[in-house]
Image (cartoon, rainbow, N blue to C red; front, side, top):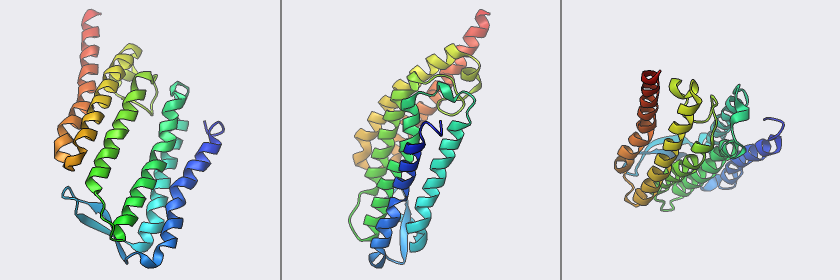
Length: 213
């Protein structure tokens, strides 16, 4: 994987670090402390120094990016991960980093930003993207629902991920539609269904198969 996607890995890593350049350009205009975490009321409840916000956060995102790449590359069944799914792994953090860092700088500069709307909308879009690839993903140890019943039974894996895909696409659409309310408690039940539904279904398939045998 590393050789095949070497160019993309370099490009995405550079993209993650681009906000550093923007931060250096805006350095004199940025406050000494920058809001880097917000509560459910859209008000900042966590602050970081300007240096950490500008330099530290992009490198933290880069670390997460490389960790995902290493985990995917060392997966014994990484050949089962489709190219499109790998594309999601390679691009999700760089694009998220660009958006979140842009929002962080904008808020620090006094620009009115609807933090809750942006974060919730991003989450909904992420679920829709992942949901589209779930049914197409073969057994592996990195991407998908890696629970005992799916990893030990290919048929269970296929059926479970088909359901998970539908739930994530539908749930993501609901989250996007309700993002305007900027209230995470509205979509919590949706996330719970998306998370637990496929697991319960997978276990049921496992139990039903054992009864037949």
